[in-house]
Amino acid sequence: MQRHQSTGERILTNLDHVGKDHAIYLPQDEMPDHWYNILADLPEQLPPPLDPRTLKPMSPEPLLRLFAKELVMQEVTSERFIKIPDEVYDAYLRLPRPTPMLRARRLEKFLNTPAEIYYKCEYVNPTGSHKPNTAIAQAYYNMTEGNRRVVTETGAGQWGSALAMASGLFGLKCDVYMVRASYDQKPGRRIMMEAMGANVVASPSKKTTFGRNILESDPNNSGSLGMAISEAIEDCIFHEDTRYCLGSVLNHVLLHQTVIGLEAKKQLEMADVQPDVICGCIGGGSNFAGFAYPFMADKLKGKSPTKFIACETKAVPSTTRGVYTYDFGDTAEMTPLLKMYTIGHKYQPPPIHAGGLRYHGKAPSLCYLINKGYVSSVAYSQTEVFEAARILAQTEGMITAPETAHVVKCAMDEALNCKKTGEKKVIAFNNCGHGLLDLEAYDAFINGRLEDYEPDHIDTPNLVP
Ligand SMILES: Cc1ncc(COP(=O)(O)O)c(C=O)c1O
Image (tube, rainbow, N blue to C red):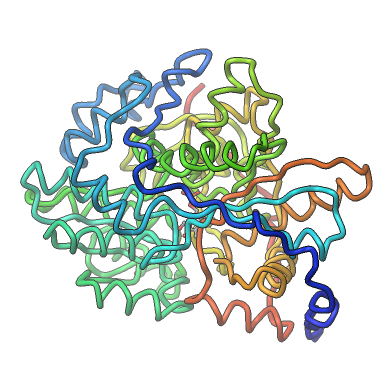
């Protein structure tokens, strides 16, 4: 067993590199008051969701039983900017937003790179990730439409915590199906959700027919986001007062997250820099999209040479080893078919600590941009990302979530590349979550107990000829 040594002594000897311009704050009265919808600027229409029975494009009507009406409208609209409702805007200000953009000068110094590294601090809110940006909006629309209860799935627990918090703000009941692997690994997250008033159950659970069927054939099944989504949808369908909320993948979720990138654009302008590289980790694609799409708008117009990199886990390599095809969004085949990079909705992800990256597919708009070459993607194993995250912790004093560790590795690799080439690139990444409730994962890494996983073989779906 290899114990991973501290890097501390090597970096604390000289602090003269720590400049004054290391934190860029956007005043609260400059927080964007609209979300940005990338569907307005794509070169062509996205391949539509298909009805799995007919394989014909599906109309949005059946979604009204699952989602608040306004969210269904946002799912299909091609309006470029959508006004943030006042109550949502007010709740954003109290998170608080805008979040700071930091320059990682100590990390730059440690890497001895000519590159400039910036990161957007989406972990600065009570639940610790970007997820409240959409949770608040989704809870708000459900409240205004008279729905009393929301139900959802959660992987690592960040999304569940955000929806639990937002449900409290808008007076809704909240039930969360938490993937068993994370439920066992992260009791702190379950407790946080319960403290905020949500009911949490490990998925697969005995609460749904789908969950019971899985447990019958495999009582120790560690679950997956695909399974938890199926359970939450089944629960929603059987309770009239309930609507389902999703933490990623769909257009309206990505839309709400664009407040991140709209702020980030203003902040980099304040620092008088243009990003050469924009990167983010991808589970379903929402934090990446939220950060990147406002910058992507310029690239789609041919106005920007920025390189975009999406980072996933080698344990669930949807975009790096999957195929771009139609697949179900969940394991029980209850969702419409979505065109995306997928490794198959039956894929059983290994129990890596980055629970939020254990999803077989990715957001259709992101997959389209990857397929057309606007975004490149890269996959890492968990040991190498924890190595990077530990360097960030020791240089910048910030412990990232295991999911976020993937983008830290990517930003560091890009900066090290600059060291070789001598290029002074500006690298910006979305620091989308803290890992203060993931410390056992750091413990496993430090004490050499982390295992890396990679599927030998992937059965890709072939549902649409
Ligand atoms: C901290 C964090 N980052 C990233 C993700 C991945 O999701 P997405 O790709 O939608 O941002 C999650 C999902 O739970 C998360 O909790």
